[in-house]
Image (tube, rainbow, N blue to C red):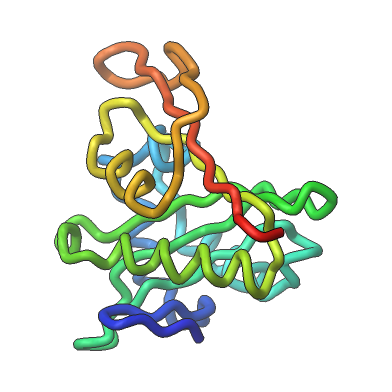
Length: 175
């Protein structure tokens, strides 16, 4: 378990099904924070939970639950995915429940994840893709040391049309 001042990160557990169902079925993030545009069933999430226990090097992804230390409630998830062992890099994504946002949970969870990625997984870099209109996420990643490395124009399809995606990366120093 990775502990910070206000949050801790832990592995997924079988009893996280209801929480995952809530977070994965939030239509406000469909197509932006995930590739899905449809609800995900309990059955699919049950199967995912079984597979989630596999080794990071085997499945090349890791999802951790962000829990608030004040009440031990699951408030979000952080994912490392698209892991490339030869190049020692992975993508990162973070999601906090809508009613728990703006409490600093994402910033602390991202800091803990980056420490874990560098010290334990020995990643050289972590990168992310953020919708250009998502100012909160852009601020979050900039604050964690990510820098903008490019823009993918009209990359994301939204109800309003096409949106640019900002590519960001954080390269570990001293590796």
